[in-house]
Image (cartoon, rainbow, N blue to C red; front, side, top):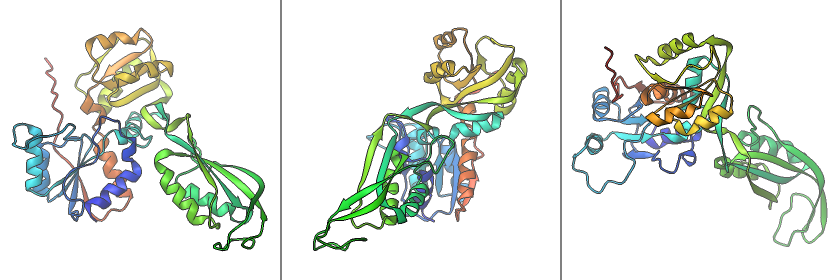
Length: 366
């Protein structure tokens, strides 16, 4: 498989269109046509990770965090970013980043956090709007099921935890073809009326092109009447953070110990413990301060994330307990998630998990 093949597989899972505007989730350096020997999965790409890739024979690094965010006007090795890129290029190691696009899907970074915590009924905490489209198409009765199934296979018709969702209304379609047509029913230059079904499905915007192509391929008409309508609804499976709950409430002290054990924390910061028990948990891998109000509104007992500034801890307003457990700590399971996904896709190259601890933060315990 080529580097481009691996990227295609990953981007079917976490489309780059779902990344935030500031992000740089893409092939950072390397030749997309290079054949993959081995792929090394890491949270961060550093010089040590490049050296590990070289030693292990990996020529593709898949990182969660992009090594490169802004522009570079020179490449002289004056900082760790430039040195890392130079070492990768010199040794023909490709670097690919899959960042906030993996944060923003309900099977991404936050899903494995909920899995490790043992939470159930997981939902996206802050669903995004402007991500949904309604596709409606007119189909002759005999072809309706074929077209519906083609749309479903293309990812249309998913609403929350339900799939194969559609609305169907029957009516009569009229048309007349010119001399240059070969109509599925009727004859050229004659008015014709056909019993049709209007199929309506909702789909995520990034699936629109594939869904339309699949629908057209399954449709029997030469010219297909269909509409694409942007929706203002929230996309329940796309967005930031997640919220879930324990099957049985956990004593607060036991919960804190559970978090420390799951994330391997020797220490972490938190606000006042407000409740004797914890049942509902909101969380966000990485920097999730912007989701605190959403966590309150959702009725979460605690909110787990990282990168809170001192004064931002006051924003708990005695309504929720904030746990700042560290940026690395919240996202440390992401390489495992990526490796698991690639294994499920039966890729033809070896997938290795980096052994380099890239966490730049250390704790002094007196």
